[in-house]
Amino acid sequence: MTLGDLAAALGCPLEGNGSADIVRVARIEEAGPGDLTFLVNMKYAHALAATRASAVIAAPGVGGAPCAVIRSTEPYVTLARAVAMLAPPDRPEVGVHPLAAVDPSADVAPSASVGPFAVVAARARVGARTILHPHVVIGAGAVVGPDCVLHAHVSIRERCALGARVVVQDGAVVGSDGFGFATAADGTHVKIPQLAPVVIEDDVEIGANTTIDRPAVGETRVGAGTKIDNLVQIAHGVRVGRHTLLAAQVGIAGSTTVGDSVMLGGQVGVTGHVAIGDHVKAVAKTGITNSVDAGGFVSGYPAIPNMEWRRASAVFRTLPEMRKRLKDLEQRLEALEGKPGSPACGD
Image (cartoon, rainbow, N blue to C red; front, side):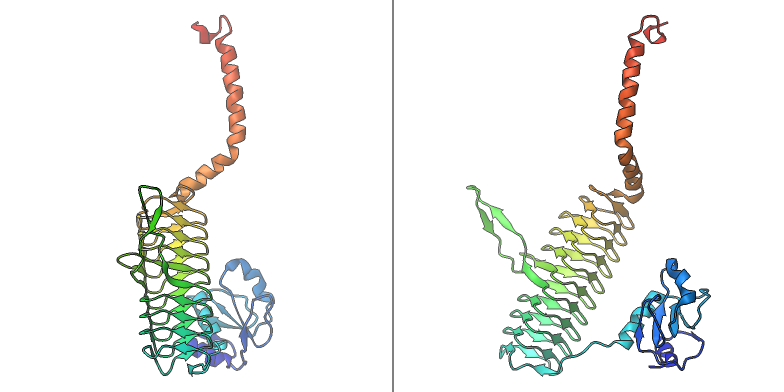
């Protein structure tokens, strides 16, 4: 693809010669002729003047490029679109592989691709152009919408539903049993059947080895456009809003509500039966034990406003020295109070 054609497809103005052939996207330090690079984080601006790339994606006002420039007010988004254009994914052949197992009552769109050793159970539905890679299992009565991609060893359990353009990475499970038990008088734990569905709305991506549990009643739901990293646990009855980002190893306990456009950093833990408002942010390893109002920015365990946590963390580092100074002051005060004729004795 020529640079001019690429810029036109991206809908971005081009500064410089558009005749160069572009074959890939590369880091600014490693790019050479035929490469498109990018400048998103300005801490790498010093490397721009020395790049050997044929072109760079940069925001308006960024200067000093020795090559052509694709101008974008959203350079990171433009980068994502450029990568998709220059490196389209390989698509398996349309149809059901001879080594797949598809129940006669299942409905698989003729344009779908079902790989070897994939299983589509009774009454399940697979939408148009959807790809099921090897060893994917679609449970009885489950629905997978159009243009989805399910990678190897994904399990979509019975009666769960995926919308359109959902991507599920290797080993993820949608619809595993929620962790629900009733404790009997003798101390034994009686399993509560987990029969309700998980609903995944359109344009969601689910990371590798993530698990999203089904509840006993109601539903677990993930809103449209939400992106979930690897090794995330979403418990039974949780509702996650639209366009939310959950980083790796986030854990959300049962019956919690997470709003729209929330960002939870790696290893954030959220207790059950709380509400996290829209646009909340939590830094990595935060423990959220109470509801958080919309727009909040929290850190620490238990979670407190980020600026309070930063100030408290700064004090925490000085506690040993503060303790020593306090002990010294206490000893000096005791000495003064015990000295005859000192002001502390009532002069």
